[in-house]
Length: 316
Ligand code: BYC
Image 1 (cartoon, helix red, strand yellow):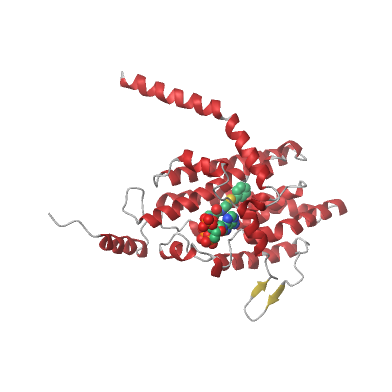
Image 2 (cartoon, rainbow, N blue to C red):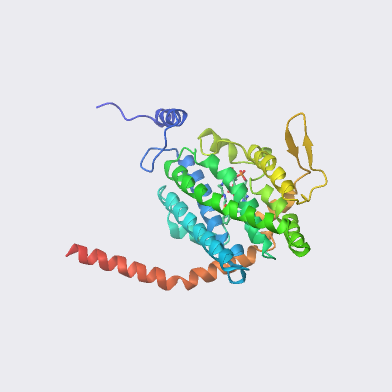
């Protein structure tokens, strides 16, 4: 019998597989740190999808037409589905769903900064589709190439749905931006409030990103926070200008030498404050999630009872 491979040999083979572009699958050997980083990142992503249902969900009862209402219901339902795929992907790494949910409800786990801001008008629903889903697609298209199979495959499906979310948001806000003075004001006000938090979604600057090095070494993240943010800015600025909207950044300029749009400084103090629980809506988001979790107890109990009954009958 050949001797058991050492840890270093396994690591070398693991890294060689990633370099060859192979996917790592749930039962495969992987370094503990790879597993932990994936659980951290995928569970935060799952929480973001679930908490992300709240700001838009609040507007379902106030949609201005049946068509808009149907679109919004479908979108919010999609986000729940995304959370499901992602919790499953985290479970495939050995995480217990209950532990992940407990970490969210206790305030220990992070979720995207963006959902800690209020949705004050109907235009915010469109602006979330355009900017927030737009930023998410940029990030998640990269993650379709992530080295962990279940995460990368979940991203393919999620990106397809996010593309519909982005398009409906862009269509809606573009219409308002060319509409009545009141509609134009509403669209501009939404952009004024969502612009900077959307840029923060890509994470802190590369120099302040403690997780990037290991995530990039093992092919989970393929591009850095700043690289993706810049790509997003270069794409979205001309789109917003074409719609007749003003970007709330007096320093914004096009740099002809590099071919990039350059923004003014991002308020990173605000970012750290928001992701540590100090944003305008953090408390309310967690309160609403806890309430929804408590309300859903009877469903979980009924499903568990049904599953154990099935197990008993299939035993007979
Ligand atoms: N928000 O080392 P870094 C959606 C944390 S939802 C909050 O750069 P990393 C949608 C970070 O966790 C889409 N926290 O981290 C849903 C870390 O803290 P810990 C959400 C953030 O992982 C409903 C610390 O800051 N997308 O589209 O290398 C309706 C240092 O950061 C954020 C995803 O989750 C943030 N924005 O890179 C509509 C994508 N950024 O954990 C739409 C998957 C950073 O060390 N995630 N932090 O305590 C990723 O791609 C990466 O995790 C990130 C951060 C780029 C976000």
